[in-house]
Length: 213
Image (cartoon, rainbow, N blue to C red; front, side):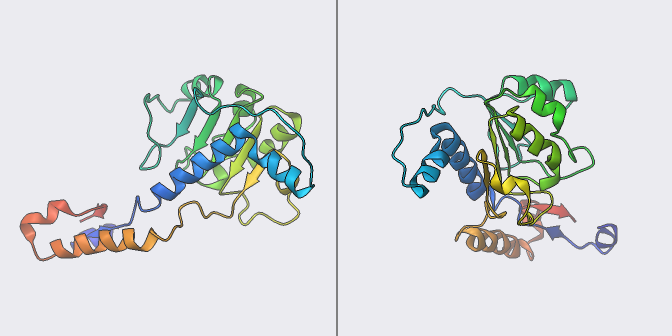
């Protein structure tokens, strides 16, 4: 990046194009757990007609870690450990959307699972190492949390013999939350808008997703 700056090269990216798909995927996870749809699917596979109790998503408290372009909210709190635990203590669902940095690596582990309630659900659509995987498995097996939905894992891909595959309170998808047929059109829109401004020095402040110039 420093060499590009020295050469006065403008760099932009496609940040945000995955947001609608990931946001909808998260809502899908939350609804599945709230309505216990995963249990219904298991019963269907076993040809079982057996009533079970579902809950409602309405009125739940969701903590979104890492807002960016994916996570809207009506309250913002700090990133200090005590603030995180305070938020987790009153959360029905925790959604991890943050990037992987030195600060966020291993952000959610045994202490955080202990703060969450036994019915809480953790969703990770950020990066796998945001969660301490072995401690997640322990928390799920011990019933310290109600379940988790993972679009990203650590390790990734998740080995076929990993214990997470066989836990009834886990949903795993193969890092595909942001990929929809609209992926490329959104990318093309950003590229086209920026390309139109390349020859117009008076409009270059309007470039989208500029990293450096």
